[in-house]
Length: 176
Length: 450
Image (cartoon, rainbow over all chains, first blue to last red):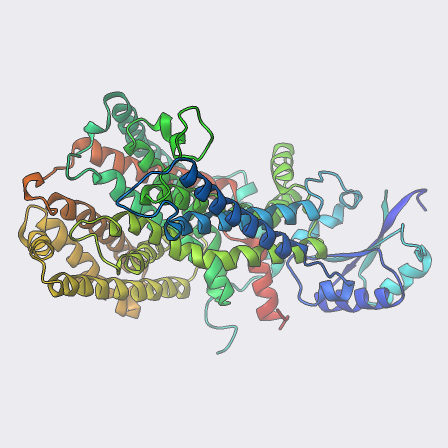
């Protein structure tokens, strides 16, 4: 066995067995689990216990801040340099709504995109999993489950058996 | 409806599908027709360069503009290009929200189309400024002149609408590309490709956590895409509708412009889908059933456009105002009548061909209808922008304007630029969204949920 281990990586033939294995290992008390699939699989985040609503929340906050900021800027600009156009009020707020709306959309867009990238830890060019050549299949047709060695209940021998019981086609030891 | 035999899903596995699409990017061989098309498009795009250099050196007077017709080709082309962009957003976001499966295989090319169409749409107002190097005056920034943009002006709204749409589309395109870039990185065998796609993929590992956040971000963007589709062209139509000019001052303008935008946009998606089928042999990914659906979308929107034409004429006469009626008589019989009747021929008469399934499903048939749609929509923008201003409320100011050679050269050149960008994109990036298609196969074949 390698001296330092990142974890065990198992490949499953389909999504259903991957979900079943994830749920079982989690119920056994393992917490440092992650699954890798070629497309989003419904039910998998729940099986892994992933509950994270920070992306839409960040998007909402950014949208509100950007919209409020833009509206405040327009009002400030109108007061800073009052300019009479066709006798309209100095603060003609209905006319300001279009730019306010556009900028809130920009806030939501950038908030969603960048919170997704940052929470996922990108950019991250290196990861131990890339050492397993077969892991390339995760972006083609492979379903993988990885149990990290940092998990307090990690036991390579027993996990190997358990993963195979769940139908894992092959299990690799991933060097750290 | 049976899930398997509606012709929308290719008869391929996840792996085979991925290999198929990856080969168009990573493969060493480039189809000869691609080089031919790129060469042709590059030649045409040089006209754009020529036009821009000429206009920048002698001034916007090179275009056919005068007072009262101050807008002319640059604004016609802006409205036309931004309209084309809208279908890309609608396909990738709104049809995703409504779970239309047929969207998956054409969404990527539609997003790319939207991206390049906006770049061109944005370049025209800059040219029209006359001194594009002062374009930053439109930004609200603290300056020594102590001036602010005029926030009540539709031209400022326009700038923000187009700029925010550009940011949105670029973000959406990159988001949907990210998992596919990782797929390319994993499939690349040459060092340069591994580095190029590896850097762009940012370390995406297809983790369930990545996907969960990805789906959340995608949903947020898709949800805000719906109001964006309606609001950007809507805002541009306000440039016209807010001004007191007979033929511009209609409340129907925003929805009317959006319907026209989507009509020409779906037509352009159809043209690109046909090009992809020809270039890469994607006949099983983009099937006749897809072409049929695109045709149906075009039909829906052209009917709204036709209704708007009627409604516009009705309103003009209902106002009982001589100038409004005058604009319409002028459109029908005046100096620009050929453009008006050309528009009616394309958008009202020939567009009815979309009713026939045999035409929608035939490649040459749909290609013809799509080109007619794009031409018709351009003529519509022409007659709206030019005919209204040339006979406004001040008879003393009436004047006609003729497009110059530089107008036509720059316009034709911009179509060349569009195709150069598009052809480069489909060679360097996967033109079919691999992860979207894998998810679709999963849902349909294996009865997977979600």
